[in-house]
Length: 331
Image 1 (spheres, rainbow, N blue to C red):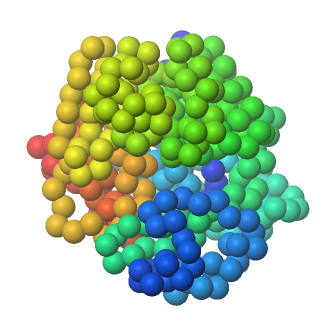
Image 2: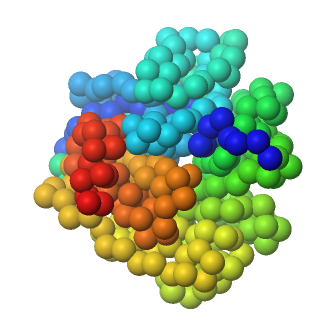
Image 3: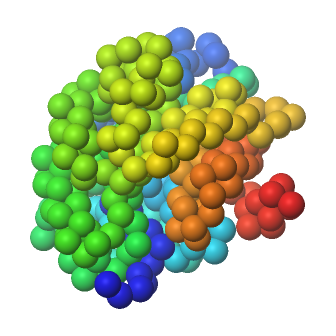
């Protein structure tokens, strides 16, 4: 097996985040699902955008956010995702390349438009996401470059993208290519509603040994296993995946690998400003450490450090020097 060209290649939604602060009253007025992620159509996206205050745009999407964090930590990464041939598609492409990530998926002609996520951030730091998935739902299997997939040490898959048929087929094919090349497959469950719709698929992938690294938060773990008891849920999945990572927000995180269980506390932070991207950046820190052969505890701590940085300011892209921050915190 040849040495990997990339530490991680990710397949995920190519989304432009449109983010603005707002008060609680606007959340109620627009009847939004506070703290959640709701799918909207293009007309709904336009309506919400018109109700937003001054906003800023940056390329986003869960897996893309993770790669941006990894790139900031010095990892070599590539991204596969579908944009349309439009202005927001150009924004996404420019932004992701600008942070050092290789991205060469050809843009899609015609409708629908490039995906966007309208994020309303309340004073308590909670983010309410409303996502128009647009072109990102139409990533076809033929858009994959098998040599590219096989050239990464880890294939990282975003659960959100399991919902539409074409990307689901693309991800299944990517798993097959990665496993045939002797590479690892990492999977993030993304959100409980995704598991509610596709839990049988996810459980089958786990049972069949197709997943090497599984990321869940405590709510996703409960949905996946059918039990609200956190420790019982861990036990039900433990041993079925080589590495299990379960995050618990302010309560820290648990990692289990080769019968070793490590629990870490959340990194202390003065104030939570915006929780957008916390799980994505936790994965960034963890995967970077894992790709470097760090211990389970070090990987978890790297994840916690990155997550704490991201929730200290608006947006899902780091503002501090992550590499220096992690080096300083780890001592």
